[in-house]
Length: 210
Ligand code: SF4
Image (cartoon, rainbow, N blue to C red; front, side, top):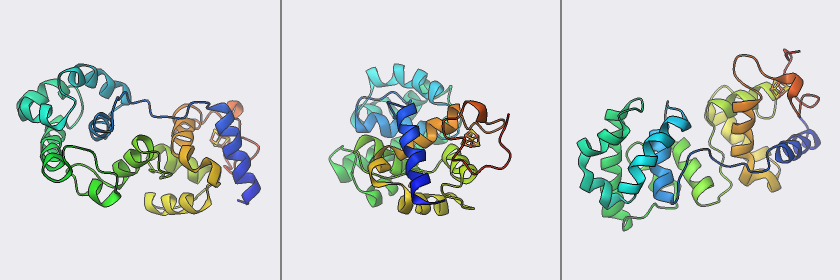
């Protein structure tokens, strides 16, 4: 795909999605971190429902530790993998207090050293909480990047690296959410909504739906 097509794709996505941001509810970097850790293999809606009750009671590492692991589980037990997520969140809160004054660190290395935080979560935090131009490749971005031809790759890391190099600078900060939201609502997994797609004429997918 050439540079002009790529730019046109992002220009159109940006016009179609005026507020490209996460659908997770949060009010601080710490709340976002907890929400993103909880969102692995869960829906944003399910996470928001749980955090709507959790955050008013505990939205700092200290307050979560005061709840304890069992207390935390009570708030997140509707979310898949809640047992291991609770264990990770407790460890993560301990590490934030021990090494980062209770604050969410702004470096990839420090984030990835936290329990339950991998490359994808670190990228989401750096992008969404701190405004850095990182792109976390999730299942939606992986699919859209491959179908359209924007950044074809066999692994998420390959797609991430290609996007990192090729997304036009002015769209870099929002690229993550533009692609996720496009994948979530238009270029959906089973039957992409090609007739309603604002980039259909630029997209390289050979099996477009009619
Ligand atoms: S034209 Fe279809 S396959 Fe291409 S981006 Fe749009 S919805 Fe996805």
